[in-house]
Length: 116
Image (cartoon, rainbow, N blue to C red):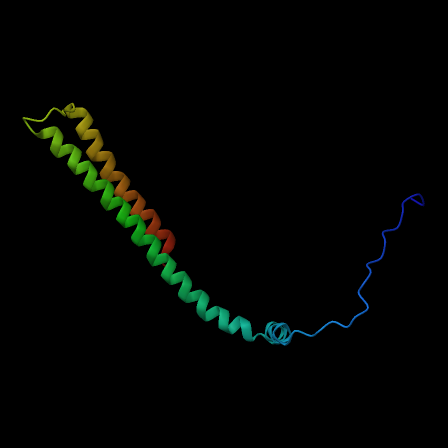
């Protein structure tokens, strides 16, 4: 281990370093716990808003998907249309879409808004 070379020490500049008052105030706020009180209030608000936005997004995507499935079912049922699907395919499409809609909304709602 004596063969290992020691790392060179850090060379600091000779000129004085200016004190950043904002950084000092921030450090004092962290050490006194003022920031924790402030952050707790905003963290709660952000969590609630983001949960509502995420739930709304999932609901919107599900509504969009259900609308498209209904369009497919409707177009397949038209007599004059060129687009026809077999009955088993239509049943499978409708049931899996409803099941996916209910499952996704339920899972997201339970995760975002747990009951205590």
